[in-house]
Image 1 (cartoon, helix red, strand yellow):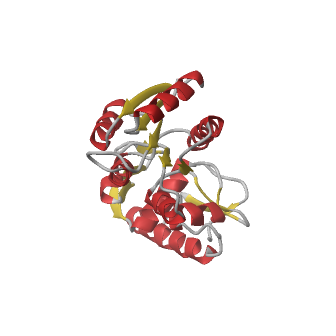
Image 2: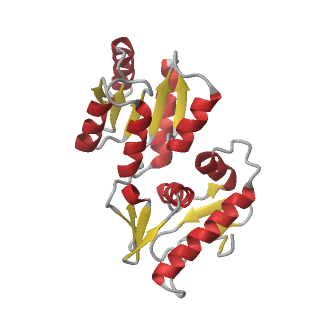
Length: 238
């Protein structure tokens, strides 16, 4: 049974969310402030977090940033902040979805279901990915063939998103939306050159003859293939 963490200080909203999600078959834990939310995040390791941005003790923005330092669990922001600037900021900070209050119960449950389907296995700090890769989110770095590789924020978010969907193609448009916050999908060259930079760093760490784990799929996007797997239709050039 998937476990969901709700970080929300409004008691009526918590009651409504808890009832909806329990009826949908989820285990639910709740926190009324950001500090308690982080404590439960570390202690419970939930499968998904529903996060209000305006909570006491530690605001939702800082909870989101800290969560992204230790895990790639899916985060659904549930907020009364309606402006597009808040949505863009949250997505760029690592949220997976953004739903404005007041919300429809069926829509919220459907979004939770979709996020859990899409993300699959949750990655936590220190866990290995495949045979040779380990994420070090608190330093925006990875261990690749035993060598630490420091990445820019963009490079780390790009690799992190590909790793979350390992073995599956992530479209260029989706990468632009999630990594750069470009919902128009018009900056494809940014993805191409970021992938080139990422590949160079990984190759320098592992040696020129090492296998490239980031594969381009012609006309679609990119995928991360761990270990010695091969993917049909891929090519090494971005």
